[in-house]
Image (tube, rainbow, N blue to C red; front, side, top):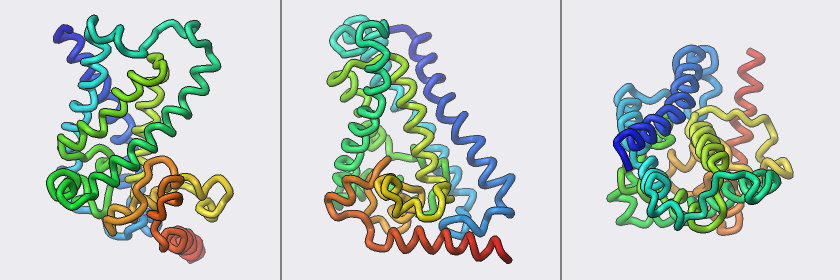
Length: 257
């Protein structure tokens, strides 16, 4: 493992994160702020100090996120022990398409139970509270974790690399998708349409409103991509549908004024 590999890995992870978060933040929180402010889930905007805190911890987290793949894949001794492969013909193109949703399901399951664990009193106070200082989250809150929580978050890469065959395309696609959905979840604005929360498919998808409620009230709505585990375990907030419907009603009323 060389310093060139380490630097490349850090820059690669940082580029993916900042290239997604920066334009989204500028669009929603700078350029369109006045025009769409009535659509914000929590009408007030955070303070500058909140943005600074989120950016600082997010930057630290992306450094930590780069460590597992760097250690496992950048080391000639450890890499053969993983399920990493580079020739797409080894498992076929169909596998690439099927493995991606499997990775999302695995991550959602891991995140839900890890997240529930982080809400135990001692762990919450010691680690998870950093993330929950964003009671009114912005896109920069997506990876604003305490360093030790960031380590737990990054272990999903270790799980992948020791359970299912992982191609570079899968690893890159998953990481980009995860960033995008995390940014959406912390956006502070709801992008899904009216009624999506009760649609046969939409009701199983986690939304920005659902995760915003989690940040605002600290309890319930622990899922990442889906509401499946929250519904199965009875942790979906009972006021979720009401909050979603009221926001969409507010949008409709205000747009007519």
